[in-house]
Image (tube, rainbow, N blue to C red; front, side):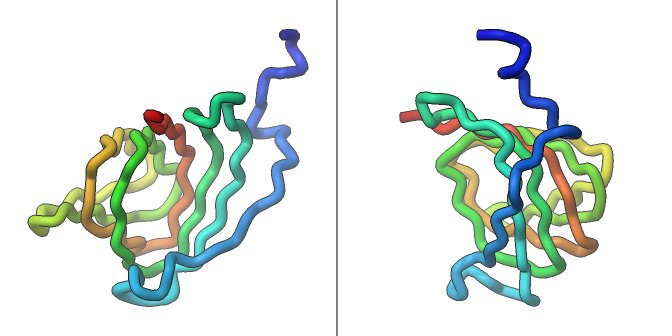
Amino acid sequence: MNIEQIVDFAQAGTAAEHYRPAPEKVLKGDPEQSVRNHYSSPCGQFSTGIWEGAVGQWTVSYTEHEYCEILQGVSVLRDADGNAKTVRAGDRFVIPAGFSGTWEVLEACRKVYVIFESK
């Protein structure tokens, strides 16, 4: 292993993958999303990159643990009981595996994500 294996997000030329949540998960709007997955571990359990989401709301069900750092925009996370947490630029948080609810983007959102998925 050498210095060339370090992944610098600012210099990574990772192509964006564009997608939308499955139609049955969309609750509001047209939440187009993109992801630039800058790194995935050889074992497939760890990945990190940049995610962007357009205004809209969809259901989520996490099987992975995810650290998020919001770089721009505003989103609201709601759990299955309707409790809400608003997150905005500068916020850092972890969504544990097992979380179910909704993600709503109020202002176009961009975040750094770090994901760990148990096998």
